[in-house]
Image (cartoon, helix red, strand yellow):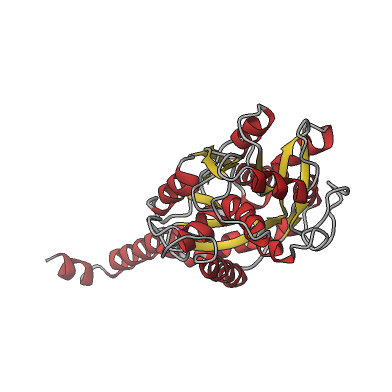
Length: 336
């Protein structure tokens, strides 16, 4: 009946068709929704404690990226199980780009490679982009009698099973680095006792408080203590000495070039299956962040190296890291 009525009223029919066309023109489409990302603040999860490598990298990004993203970035710390708790939280989040991860080498490459209990695989996430790479160092208290890597090796050798070190997980790079030192010296992987802590700041407090003899991790959180003399760095994993710790010898200088395989890094991850529109939006943002002098300054002040990569290059880099640690499993005494 309505159709016949409209056919008998050409003017009214034309008006209805015009109104329908107007409504369709303004109706939101899936593409329009995608183009509006983000239309609210983005949550960036650091899976380690405040003041650690992941936290510092996340906050550096949150300081600079909003002017290109158009929304604020809120950093939260969800720590536990060597970064696995926070990582799993992001993996389980909605696939909308509003919950992202400051991914670290320990939780995203080392744990999947060395710990069969890790609840996800190295490639379970959407890899948005590498952010920065940081040298690894081993530190002791500034009051320690240990002055060099050789002093550390001699001390551990003289007291097998008695000296201890702080780690940020059970099977992460903070464990691999000292174990490689032990193996290089012809000692057993478990010659010193590993004591896991929730994050790098806790390991620093443990060293300075005399609760452990040493710890190894990314340079950033240690830089202030090294400069003040509260901490003494024994070796750095880079080929060249770093400006932030110019007196610290490199792995090659102490005769252990294979320590260069172990370095820290932070990348931006999201849950698996992020929409391409979200990935593309962040790729554009990171391209601008890469050239931002404020971000570069923030990263370099911590002794880290700005290293923004595309999603594809990030995946290739992380896969190489995973395979490197996977190959070390038997060598460092971890069964697969």
